[in-house]
Image (cartoon, rainbow, N blue to C red; front, side):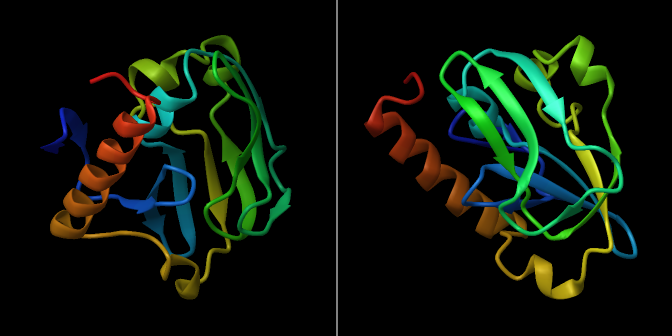
Length: 147
């Protein structure tokens, strides 16, 4: 973990800058997905999560889940294309875990992910540090997160 702009960030993961999601490679063509700390904070307190059904085919940007939170109600876009392999059923009982532990609260596993699906993700400690710092500053200036 590295600390960037006051947030702990896992530099071993890859990040989707458009959706503020982390992506963890878990084997050939398999990833696990969750909110990064900025994504979890900017949606507000999450009170409900409706997860996509295992087996559902996804394209990048299609709904991986529906989130109901203090500042946002709507779809959570998939950061990569593939098929939903598994979902974190514990989030149905405790959706707020995403806010309190974004890295420990994965949302879904996606299978059938091809190598080209990672081209838009941010990886590597320096790139992550630069992107996360700039994003946190932009969100602070917009008043989306506290100073």
